[in-house]
Each structure stands twice: as C-alpha cells, then as structure tokens.
Length: 153
Image (cartoon, rainbow, N blue to C red; front, top):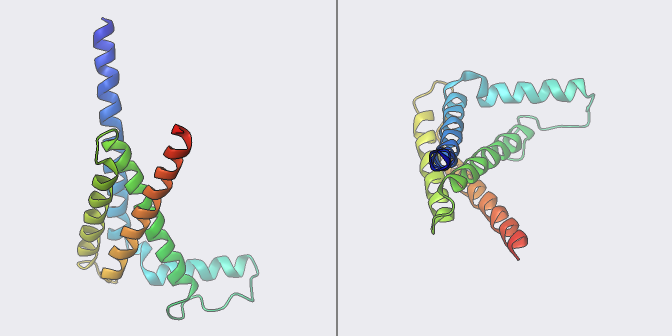
C-alpha cells in the first residue's frame, strides 16, 4: 500500500510540471490567436491607463522604438517566455541538462509562436521577438541558477 502511494506521488511530481508547461503554452497560443493582444490594442490600453492615472507627462505611447507600447510589449515577451523556461526547467529537473533543455524548448516554442503569429490578421512575426524571448528564457534560467547556488551552498 505504501509503495503504491509513493508511486502515485512520483507520478504526480513528474506529470504536474508538464501540465503547467503545456497550460502556459496554451495561454501563449491564446494570446497569439486573440486580436485583443495586438500592438494597436495594447497602445490603447496604455493610453487609458495614462489618462486614468493622470500621467499627462507620459509621452510616446505609440511612437517608435522607445515608445511605451514597444517597451511594454517586449517586457511581456521577456517575462512570458522567461516563465515558460522556468516551468520547463522544473519539468526536466533534476536531469543533467535541464537548463539547456529548458532554454532550447523555450526558443523552439518562441519560434513556433512567431510562425503561428504570421498567419494572424493584424499581427506581425518578427525574428527580433524570438531573440527577445530567448533572452527572457536565458535571464530567467540564470536567476534560477543563482538562486540554486545560494540555497545549496
């Protein structure tokens, strides 16, 4: 009886992390598929927030490279794919190449996401977004590595 419970716990510890990974991948797919998350819509959200917070001094909401819209969208890429990398790392852990595997998995997902985005109206697939996603994954995994070194020493 104890052995069966132990086996069930081991299976849960292996399956639940992958459920989280594929749930997050599904959320990314939904974000890409939805017209709510286009550049135009995020610019209008930012404008509404600026108006509600009475931040009249905030300029450049949707005005080129250093616009608030651009910054918010790219920080979102960094964080969304950074979280995906951490979830994938946790699913692979404690395998030897868990960090590298998580990074590669995340970059492949980022490339597939951009490819999927190329078929969506009002969306643009950009190689630079894949690079940003890869950087987000790398930064997140680096933070995990630093945390692990701090807790294990």
